[in-house]
Image (tube, rainbow, N blue to C red):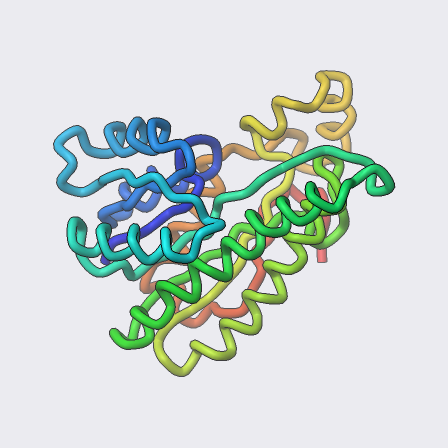
Length: 243
């Protein structure tokens, strides 16, 4: 089965694409930045036989349909969807304007809904599928980097994941969320070094996480071995928050 990853042009999305490809999936690399997506696809397979790239704006449901159709024609049935595309903006809650709030919620939450609405019915019809929605520790406890709109969108993803998991459980389709925190990459790079040091000091394992560790977790959830896991939110935060 092929895998489609949104927001795969850099950071966690890129690492997830690599992990899925290493696990044997053909990968549809999608991103609003088409050049970045194409670069990742070339990293996976220069020949383009098991990886291909598409420009995808997750705000447009019709774009999801077009890309899903093209990916299935090129790579085969999409049996894995990873909703990773996201927008992160740091802003004190009392300073968030309505337009910015709507934009973050649209990219981070409505984009997940569109991806699921387009690809879940195809998985249900085939009787098998894996959906992994990228949430965040911020969706459970608030965030140290991004604003309240980001945290609210990530909390919404957790609830949406549970609802979809219940609806699809009898059809061979699992739906899970992954909640990373303090992962090395573009988002953490925006945090001043002194703040990074302070955050690192609160992490029980004593370091930040790596993007490839998140990728491997997603690849596991996409595997046959994870067939009895659905509706779950898996934390990957070095013990920063335990439950």
